[in-house]
Length: 143
Image 1 (cartoon, rainbow, N blue to C red):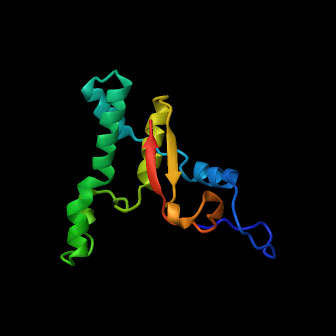
Image 2: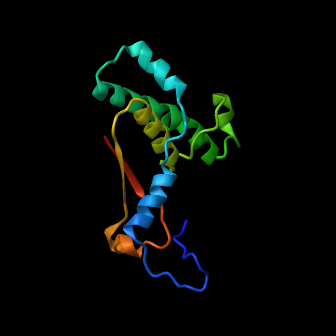
């Protein structure tokens, strides 16, 4: 993904903070309803928002990321071509946190819990104004 100028004959040298914020606002827009989280929390009878967010975070982290670790290593070792078929669900890329953030953001939005997504880049890559071509960012959710 890159920040490209509107006209091809203009060479872009930097980006504005507004361009970066707009890109990530669109990129991490919460849009997936997760019914299994609601069912999981119903069984827990949690009313406190802090406990609800913590339980949902660990549930989603396991459901979308850690439960596929064995299958991921089986595939990497060449034991099976597609060991994920046993889960009846195609797993997220274990290195891609974007989908997890989108799903967790949707949960927080549905529960009316305010949150922010903090995106940062390594200091040695320059300032945010120098961000013309995006490298995978380090993502943290702040609740």
